[in-house]
Image (tube, rainbow, N blue to C red; front, side):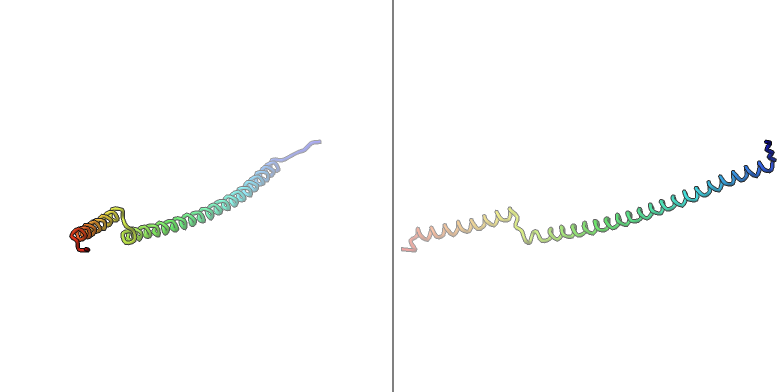
Length: 117
């Protein structure tokens, strides 16, 4: 059995084969690109949500630090009004004791002079 193949048949077969390979290649590339685009879009959505979360957290932290600073300034303002320092207490106590000592000396001198006889 003799099979005769002409040149135009071989060329047509090769063109068909390479056309199928190119079509398959194009099909797989299109699917790969679509999958890659989907992954990039998912990544962008994820990153956007993370950036929003970070921005919200940063804003909350800034608000909390402002409140804390305000509270600290209020505390600094009311500390001298509400609380007594140790040195002030000692000074007041010394004044009271001095006055009591002077009163005790007066009573003693009155008693020695005989005012209560």
